[in-house]
Image (cartoon, rainbow, N blue to C red):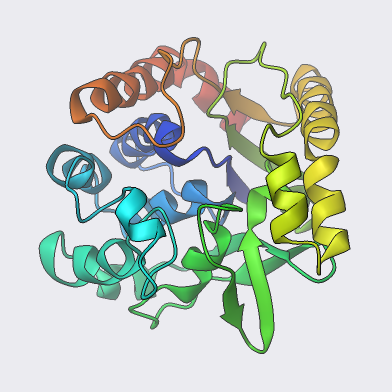
Length: 283
């Protein structure tokens, strides 16, 4: 069996997935292949390093810290992003809430971040390096249009992986995962609407027409992916865990108390379906 765990992004809403992954760790359900877009993969590295509760610790202590996110970071010429990139991807993992790089290096599976090539508008799937303590690949995967600067890796510029492939379960299947856990951050009934910031994005990224096109078609591709996922679930080919309520939390929510409610919902949903999940894995 090759187990894939696919994680949708969703910025602050991805705290739901943190609850899911903490229960998977409790049950020693560790993937052979971890793939995600945006915050999905950023939070998943703590799953790979087996640091149960680490993401919750960050949420409780730092999500409402002015150093974490805010408009002042967006207008700072040294940052140019709504999130304080060096604080999130350097100071937090390397000083404040230490990341276990040894355990991360020892993880035997693959860890893949989805990024969107700003020139082609296509998804690329990059291995998350085990030795990069500034997490450039994660920065690229999380680079939300308008809210982030574009991130350069290997001579190419990338942005949020969710633009091109929000829920990369098909990539996991194509890589030989015959068992797949897919974690969503929206209710199953959610239907994605076109981006409200589309006009602004068209101006900002006018030199990258394929990227603008990818943003314009994102909603349709997302909704089709959800339909495909539902079909695969009926066929017993994937196991989907999704919130039944996101409690109105938006992508930039920074209230720890509100976020912990969604984290606990992730725990509850996963424990509620654990016997069903084990049966799926053992089938």
